[in-house]
Length: 334
Ligand code: KG4
Ligand code: ZN
Image (cartoon, rainbow, N blue to C red):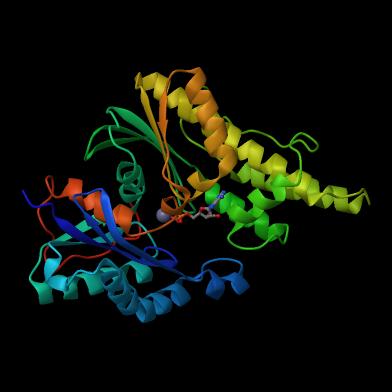
């Protein structure tokens, strides 16, 4: 049996991605063109600028991906594209391009959910992931605990009520002038500081509550910093970054472990851009070890947005979904 070659296309936020994946797990090429340099001076992603950059970049990114793989367009069996959730103008670029390509090559087109795609960064990397499982998806736009019975059968256990975890990192980094994107910037500063020097709250909400809230922590961080500044005390941004990171990580870890135990699963997955955070990986690993849970997380390069995870997700979706029609649309929400 020939293993299908899937071309994935991803343009939901500020990364233009194209990837070729064979048999759901073998990455033949994975190209990501980041727009960080463009959005940096605004301190965050500007949606219209992102759309315009995608429309410039998508053609060359797909071409480069084909070239790197050594395959021809005729070797592509299926085209998969992220059509939800995300910035609508950004999504539309990928969807339009994918439709044109599917039409021109006469190949089936599959529409993929970006968050489900993030989960598949794990299936790309690891063999033998056992269901049922609980996955923590932490990105710039989302913070969700998902219970997964098997491929395609998912239930959202809880989400954030306000800011996503990555969004909180980005906002605090901007407030502290640490740079953009905020996650890696805070992580770097935190390595030079210590948690516990300053004290920030952990928002657990109710017990057995799988929702999150990070806006209170964000406000507490800003208020503390402003108060210290006014009082003329010596300020240490690295200590504050370390305490902030520890506060976010602690809540993510404890809620994930509690969610896994409440469902009686043995497997835990970590996914999304914030999954690149080393403290989160380390602390969740430790807690999972203590509680006899099998933890999987993607390699750092596959945590943030990429099209390989979209193509891999499509390999499983292919058995569940009908191909999309050329009327396929994009949707900003879930
Ligand atoms: O998954 P992703 O690339 O895009 C979305 O789907 O949102 O995630 C981007 C988010 C940003 O908020 C970024 O600050 C965060 O992931 N991030 C990190 C780290 N690397 C990226 N947060 C914490 N630590 C990191 N090392
Ligand atoms: Zn993402």
